[in-house]
Image (cartoon, rainbow, N blue to C red):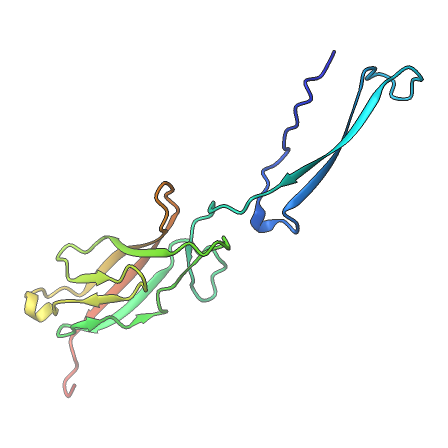
Length: 176
């Protein structure tokens, strides 16, 4: 039965994990597929060169100590006082990274949990700021849990990862 000559992959090729981005296949075709060594067989040979392109195909991830990338749902923590206003001290610092090597900018945002809109996140650096103190807002809340996202700034692809920022609020002890 004649073959169409289709070539299929047994597994996907990933530029980021390959040692080389160029592959070569030696191909041959014969008019007598049952016997390549037949004296009447006519066979021709060629080489197919395959270039594997580097594309943005992997989601970014949050860097987190002692968690191999990509770290799933890392939990960042900030401890503040009721009177706090300004940049949040976050441990560890929020930082995204990308397995792809194309240098696509990452964008940070708060996706959920910011019910009173007290917090803003710098989309470029990932820094979180508290715009109004809890005292000023009249909110005696002791903890906030924000769902934060790092995503690639790509128009037609949604490549992102989610993390958690826990903001713990405490009263200053006497003498502070």
